[in-house]
Amino acid sequence: MNVQKILVTSALLLSPALALAHPGHDHTGVLSGIAHPIFGLDHLLAMLAVGLWAAQQTGKARWALPLTFVATMLFGGLSGFAGIEMPLMETGIAGSVLALGLLVALAVRPPLVVAAALTALFAASHGVAHGLELPELSSPWGYAAGFVIATAALHAAGYALVRYLPQAAAPLVRIAGAASAVTGAWLLAS
Image (cartoon, rainbow, N blue to C red; front, side):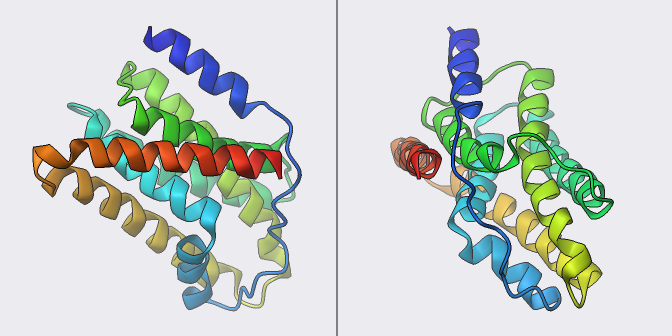
């Protein structure tokens, strides 16, 4: 059953979508880097969902998923900074909101290698998109540092929400995942 969920999620991730138009943000330094994941709906939902999903896991996956996301996002950012583009990058970003939302809503617990691979794929999309913008910025390294700090903080917030809420609130986490999935579907259709 979990393999079917992963296949459906992957198929949805590869669906076509219009660009989410990342260029044009104010990227002037650390504070701008912190602000973008918090005020960019696609990033906010994806980053929180990584934390929510990690907290639904057991064992090593609880820390491996957020660390995989941040590390892969950094690698993707450096790749984008070097001018390397990723096919279906914007679709991957919107798809990450949908897929991560579904994974949270369904409380999917795949093997760690599968969970980490999905997380890395989503992170690469986010990283490359912003890495491509870095050469045009007045303070690319400050922006990148702020973006990483905000990403890690949003992962931690999602994780803490699940881990420290009373068990009776668990359905609310799944509802939040479903809301993220619906938003991701809307982003893909936009």
